[in-house]
Image 1 (cartoon, one colour):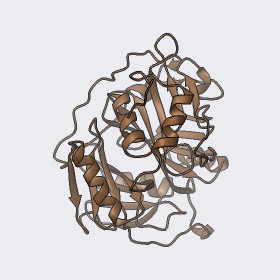
Image 2 (spheres, rainbow, N blue to C red; image 1 turned 180 degrees about the vertical axis):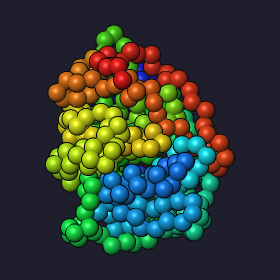
Image 3 (cartoon, helix red, strand yellow; image 1 turned 90 degrees about the vertical axis):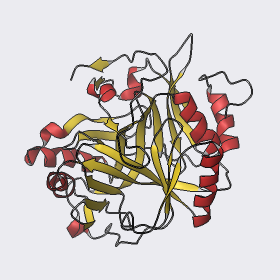
Image 4 (tube, rainbow, N blue to C red; image 1 turned 45 degrees about the vertical axis):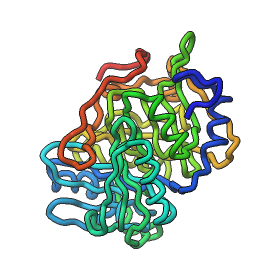
Length: 355
């Protein structure tokens, strides 16, 4: 929660450093980003894009879903593609360090009157018992400890294809009340802030924040965009050459129109990136080359929303679709899509190019 001297939605590097120091240690331990369920309208078309073109490893499949992982991952899946009547996000998941963490997390959500439900073993193939919850503005989040093991293919070089996807790295989400979500993820869930963006004088309102549990720039980024929605999922590529290779593979297989933005280098995070749109419009980032954030007293980096190098270090603006097109999320029981609300901070993002 906000500390003494912090105004609503207004933070400095010093105040965020204090949040980082007091918030990280919790009775439970959230380890890292774990997996994502994307709902797609054509499994065969999605499989061709993710497996045949980008090179994801297929662990298992049935008539309703495909379970994928990266070359470095030794677990059943980090991405689920599930057949549905419309594109949406089923849930975004985080790994915890013990089964007891699930019980403690349920108590935290219940104590704050936030919805929860248990996912029993077998409901999602490849994983054990899990806890699903809604965040304060309605993001469908899952916490899981047990996942079936799978062969790590990191050194099976003859099996590497496409973009040489290594592992899942992060989520970026649009939330209608960024201050509420920021306080939740830092104050209650124990995430640290690596970098943040605000609106400059006179208001200095928080516009986006990059939060982590594992020691790199982010496991989840919160953006002041219509939500709750998923902006993108980021997967770690082996190196910048792998991302450039992905562009060539996409072009040579007739998928050049999947490239939405990049390749380029972010100012924020320093990562080399490529943003793609899958056959259903879900946004996927190929990402590599950010930095270590293990020190608890590390300096959080502030970016002005008016700095053109924030989006792309080289200065190129993002397309309008970047701010206007996101993936809707399902409600907790999955029966419907959550309503989308406008963002609470009213700010015009400069340096936007037409699509």
